[in-house]
Image (cartoon, rainbow, N blue to C red; front, side):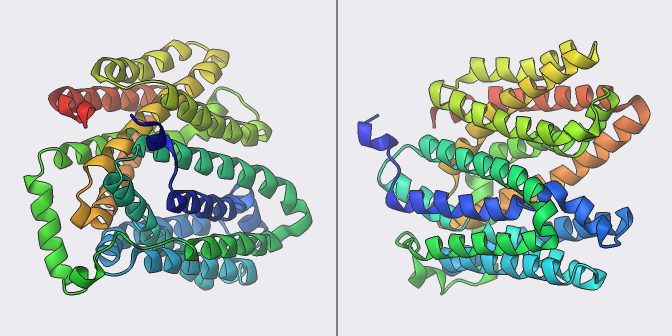
Length: 392
């Protein structure tokens, strides 16, 4: 690899910076979100309904948004996604007492997340391919930006809430504005607008699924994304249940959230220093349920082993992210990213249902172990079948 291959391009720097402020603003209210809504008179049932609206909307609009990005300007779609998020947070900040308006806000929130995927990121990936630059380096830097911005959002949001209350959403708006302004400075040199605007949605769907069927690696990459949900959803949705069972006081949950973000940063650092091959990948996958099982014996050991499994998974997930970016078909790139996200979202819902069922039957500790084993075995089998993914 040439020395300049590891450098970030001007557009990739702008995208990483724009995403940093976007995620910083988005996560600013996350640490106090439930508390804020409860103080505004919402019940837990209504809060769950808002989350459901967000998830359903993001699933429904995910794949169509990718097709729209491939047909029109990815830069414009990226900016529209920020505008939708801006309006969403504005409505939450001004009209949090009105549930129907909050439903509209979460509809826009879900639409925003769906629209954003596969936009400017796709342009940067095409640029990296054309210039034969290191996509792994871009993935690592992007991961750092997401984790650091999440930490800042979580810490500052929890601290500022007692001073700003609902006005914290207006602080998020200023960060979205900065992200929007940075996105204006990016270029759109890697989109064949002339050709794409002659295509219809039907044409894009037909071409996309044709590529998916004919490409020897894409179906297997989709399977890996599906199996990853067996780890991701239990981790995100049930770690509070696990920590409560091992008798961690709720007051320390905020620190646990920060610890998980630092796990992501550590994983990015380790991923930048190691070379992933079939043997190391399969060993890592095997270690996830094994280390969790070691920590199963006691409360203290669980608190040590659980974050270690998160670090290992994040390293694997970064590797998978690089593979997805490398195999994505250029003529279908935004639609492909959206397809990956759509299938991953559907798999997440199914894995969440499975985790809930296993928890009700066996308890949260054994449920985690079952899903981690399923994730590790299924992922290892696919990687063993498609060894050539490591040479891409």
